[in-house]
Length: 83
Image (cartoon, rainbow, N blue to C red; front, side, top):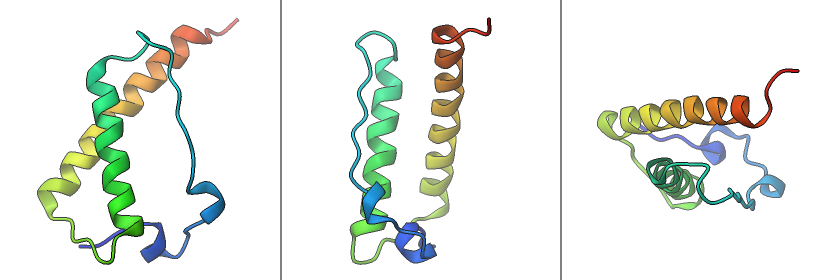
């Protein structure tokens, strides 16, 4: 199975270079590592010659992304509570 924005046809070079900065102590190290792993996998797929992702790795990526998003939503609620 191969996937990525270049394969899907929705690659946008203007959005390809971005930086994420997070204030120290707001995010557990586990989530920083998840982000690095997911970014690395995305980069491999988007810029590599050909990347094959097996079911186990795809499921791992989905699980890490889901857990990361839950953490991010919780952090946003703490930083920007409803008034």
